[in-house]
Amino acid sequence: MKKQRSVLLDRTFVFALLATDDPAHLSAKRIYATLVDRYEDGDDLLFAASTVLQDLPREFRSVTLAPVTTLWVAHQHRVAARRVRDSVTPEVAIELVLLQRERIRTIATASPIFDRYELTVLHASAIAASDASAEGSDTDPHGDGLNSRTEPQPAQRSTVE
Image 1 (spheres, rainbow, N blue to C red):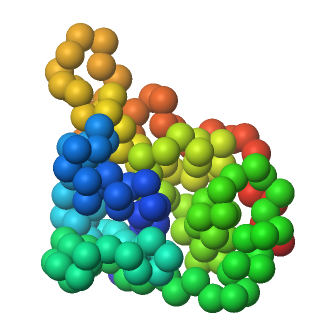
Image 2 (image 1 turned 45 degrees about the horizontal axis):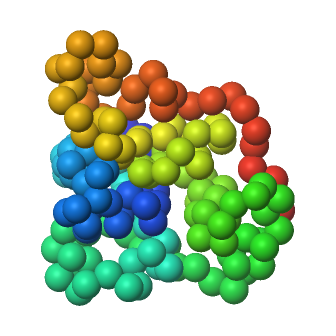
């Protein structure tokens, strides 16, 4: 049996999917389509925090995000998030706690904040959404949203307790 990759969809990624006027919308759509294909093939498991999913329109959650499993944020997660020593928002701190507690090593995001952690980062950005065939493009030929600017960095580790 093959090992499935777990992918956390962060707040910025989910909202880039939802907001058609977001500069990262097209890139997020492409990455999500690839993730759903991988989910259907049994290669990926998709997750998002309950704090991200709770305010979404019911149709978007039940149709577009149907393959996404909810990671319920409990009091213990909020307490651990307050102990995160990195200077991040409370939402990012909760996502860092979930990544650690659930042993998720891949994140889909529209924010550069996760570049400093030892994670595989799937970036949805306005740059990635631009024409990939443009001269000098360093977009990954496999089309999974990774490029030379988003490779995992062997830098700081989260100091979540």
